[in-house]
Image (cartoon, rainbow, N blue to C red; front, top):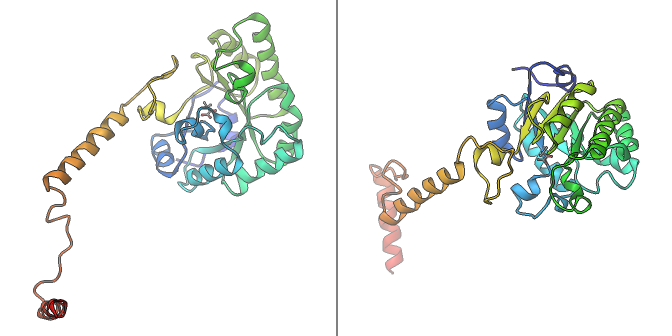
Length: 287
Ligand code: KIV
């Protein structure tokens, strides 16, 4: 497969559905890419999913660039998008451009994503001016957890839906190349998808988006918690498979079945020289 680019994703509007998944490290990027991902998002969900934090507010640019670089080192055909963490695009437009630049230069990302609507326009325009493509993110924006009062479906009332649609139009007008819609009613996602000229990528936003995204660990059943949002479809139970495999390993240690002869290095016992050397060492040790 050829390298997937920002213009390539942009041209998928209304066409073949875009397949996006998160990944946070080299092996997960290899797996996502082998499976045919169009976009690998190095999401700030790394905070909850991998690093065990309560929310995404815990990670900063250093952490996100570190994980983005690990994903990029897998050299995926998929477009790598680095997720800008909380406080990396809220202070000033200059600060935002500098931080976005780190995702490209140090992280190897082809684009960045940030959350929010009209109030982010100045920063978005500056980043695009610096030739860094941006993906938008509206609806449930986890970095706004305290303002939203929890992780709740957004745009359920007419006024909120109207604001979300007009935010989407503003972001598209500013030049973002794709837009994540998270936890919004299907009707709202359908209208946004119809009204803007760039691809929408849904997570808990129903079937009408131009693409879909889920968190890697949710798809594979690798999560450590019991909570599973309504919109997650789990395609494997790798956490259970991993525990079962590890239990077999430990049982083999206990029984002495591991390591076997084939899993063991041997001396070249036919070498008289080595045997004589060993006998020498033994004799010395006894003195
Ligand atoms: O951080 C993340 O994983 C995300 C996706 C849920 C879109 O932003």
